[in-house]
Length: 386
Image (cartoon, rainbow, N blue to C red):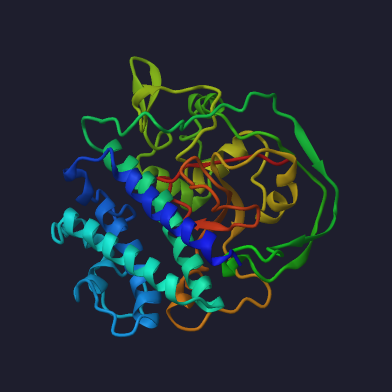
C-alpha cells in the first residue's frame, strides 16, 4: 500500500493530467459520441469524478452534500448496484450539464477528497483512493483514444496536438526468443496495487515456444493487405470473416489510400504511414488473420507473461489468443466494486502490455486488459509466436 502522503500526491497528479489531456479540445469536441464504444470527453471528466464521490465521499464524509442530485444518474457507467443511469449510447446527447459545470464538479470533489485525507486515514480508505486513482488512469487512456476517434471521424481530420509519438519504431531486427517447456507461475504476487483479475497466482504448464522480440510493423501489415489478406477467407475465423464482409473492412482503422500510398490519421493529423513502426488499431480478428498469413500464431496470455522480461513492451496493447476468464479461486468483491471486472469475463479476449496512451505508473506485466474481438479503436497491435 502506498503511504497516504504519496497517495495524495498521485491523486492530485492524476486529476491534473486528465484535464491536461483535454486542453487542446474545442468546446464542441467535449460532447461528441460517434459510436457506442466511444464516450464524450465531458462524460469521462464527470464519470471519474463521480467515482470518488460515490465510493469515498458519500461513505466517509458525514453529512456530505452532493454537488448535484442528478450526477449519479448522468455519470454512472455500468454499476447496477447503484441504480439507474443514462444509457451508454445516449452519452452524446448530454449537452447539459455544461462543460464548465463539469469542471466545477471536478474541483469540488477533488478538494473534498484532499480535505478528507487530511483528517482521516485507514487501510480501507487508502485502498479505495488507490482504486479510484487507477480507475481514472484507465479513463485517461480511454479519453485519449476516444478523442482520436472523435477527431479521426471528423471529415476535416483535424489535429489534436503534436505531443504524442504514436508510432515509435523498434530499431532492431526481429529475433525469436526461445522459452523452454515447464511449469510457470502466473499472476500478481507483490503488495503493490493490482486489479482483482490479476490475483489467484497459480502454475500453468507451457510447452516450449518461440516469441518475437518485436511487434508486427506497418510495412508487414501493408504486405498482408497487398497479398489479398482481407479477401482470403481461409485466413479468418468464420465470425471474423463475417465481420470483414459486413463492415467492408479493407485496412486497419484510420488507414486511407491516397494517390496509391497508405496514409493514416494520427493525433498529429493525416500523414504517410511510418513503415517500420508497429501496426495499430487492429481487431483480434485482424491480428489472428495476419498470424495465419505469416504462418505463425498469437501468444496465449500466459506465454506473453512468461516471456515479457525478454523484450520491450508498452507501446501497443498486444492481442493474445486467450479468452478473458477468471484465475483459480477468483472471487468478486462485495457490493458495487465487485462489478468492476468479474461480470465482463465472457466473450472477450485478453490483451497484455500497455500503449502510448497508457498513463505512467498504471500497467505491469500481470495486467489483464480485455476487449471484444471486433474492437480496434484502442492502440492494439500484435506479436507473433512460432
